[in-house]
Image (cartoon, rainbow over the protein chains, first blue to last red):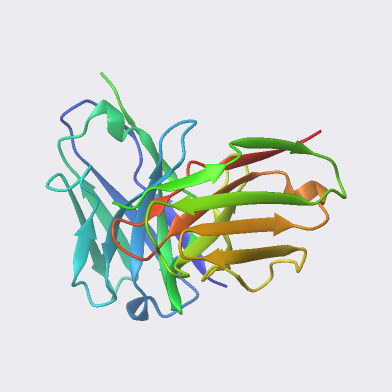
Length: 120
Length: 107
């Protein structure tokens, strides 16, 4: 069974840093592209980052470029999101999502989400 | 960036009703269109990819259509488990963008 387990969310002060993790199981992690998607409280979904199966290329939304870093460890079957210079508007539930590459890109499995709250 | 606009933002319907949600892209995205369902407090679930292809396990009362800029998601006979929020997403070009969501509520 495919499983993605998000962790690392916490309350952090503006300007602070946090590292999110996504532990994968039930599939060959090293063969799949991965993404991070976030959802602010009561709002819609926002894609924020992509990483290929090998670790390159990597892409970011403009809203997080230069502040967030996506990475992966295929040996540990884990995906990461290093978040620096956090702002109040980064408050959201963060989901990792597996990329499905069949005909068109989509996200076929999602983690349960981890809540990041940026507040003083 | 490609903007995705869904309508309506919310809709009330009864069990057994047929419901259609529309999604419009700000430029042509061919068939690079996906639909997701999200229930409160849960992660989104992929329903349809490539505009019309049902993800494994999704019931056949759910269907999608469209290409270019205009797309629809139809649920032919609403069941209690269908009441949720639905999002379209374009995957034609980065950044992948979502519609603002359509909340399907019980009448």
